[in-house]
Amino acid sequence: MRWPTGSDPVGLFWGNGLTNNENKAHYGDRNAGCRLNLLPLSRGQRDHADGSDAGMRRRWDLIIVVAVVVGLLVVAAVRMPSLWGDRSALRMDPAYMQHQKGQIVVEVPELYELLNILVAISPTGQTGPGGYPREHSYYKAVMDWFLPFRDHPLVSVVEKQFNNGYGGMRGSCFAYRFEGDGIVPSYYGEYGGFCEEHRREFEKFARESKFREFYQQNEAFYAEWVRTYRERVDLGGMWRWLETEFPARSDSMRVAVSPLSGGSHNTVGYRDLASGYREIVMFVSHPQEYENPNRPPAVASAMALSGVFTEIDHNYVNPMSDKYRAELKATMPKVGDWNRPPEWANAESYYNSAYATFNEYLTWAAFLVYAAERYDAPTFEQVTKEHVRVMEYRGFVKYDEFQRRLMALYQERNSGETLADLYPQLLEMVRGMN
Image (cartoon, rainbow, N blue to C red; front, side, top):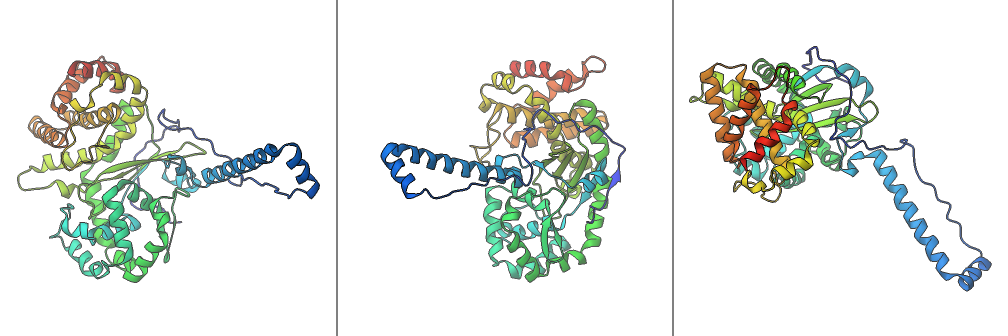
């Protein structure tokens, strides 16, 4: 199996302790199953059952049905842990984990790029804002090559899922890879999800459109795309800082940067069931997305850094917040005072709990704590203003006050105290902002 390219050791090697937010689900042996011997009753047995206890047969029928259902669920759980809602718990490739430990990989994954192309040629991709660099030669090359296939059945399937939620779909496609003309699981075992459900359609589209030929022709562009990302974003520095400030630990990191993903970000954590090995995966924008003539280069660089930082640190903030779920709910009883969904958001699912809202406030404000130590005063001041503007646009109406109070709290901390140590004071701070 070919390993991901672009790996650089960052000298980080930690233990594999599980964090509190992970469900320590235990699944049986992969070959576990349920075998039932369903033998017919003899005529005499039937007569006896009918005459003495007709209810007994019904009870046995119920027992058999329950046993079959339980057996099927056990087998399903072993084969696809995601059935239980914990798709992060997987059976990862041992050789991959050994190779990957301590590494950071930045890449334009092949199947992930195919997914983004399918979105780009869909009606939504063609008519919506999308964040696509339409003037870029790569975008034009994509349109020239793939737009003739916009009526392919897979395009409408992808578009429908994209409009219902992009994160899970790309997380699934990231967990698979091409092998010849076929698509197979990559390093995360039987991940399941959207890509598994539509694997044959992906293979058919790739063959008919000659996608792999297109991808190979653009490998030099992808390599340069990755090189400039690594040059402008200090992933190793962020990783080290977060593991200084929080108790959670990760063993490796992968960053997917598609030229077509626009400003859509999310993060996924994968955990090996056997060893507890943890890998963080981020889907983020390239630094070029933050460049414009009115933004100084240093500010653009900092905002690009923020784009990935505020995804990475969910893997550190969320596990710490898990210890304080009850307290957070009591401390932030009126989430609507903190989080007012904008018109473009789904109000029913938009950070609709104290836990989710607090985590979003803190993951963004933690970046400003990190940035304050790394940028000159004028750059930091402008970055802070842009942060506040973006967060308020997203509906987090108390973010400016939150980040100011957090900065003061961090600056006044005792020697050796970390952000994680400050959680009790953070809760008091939040209570005082209600």
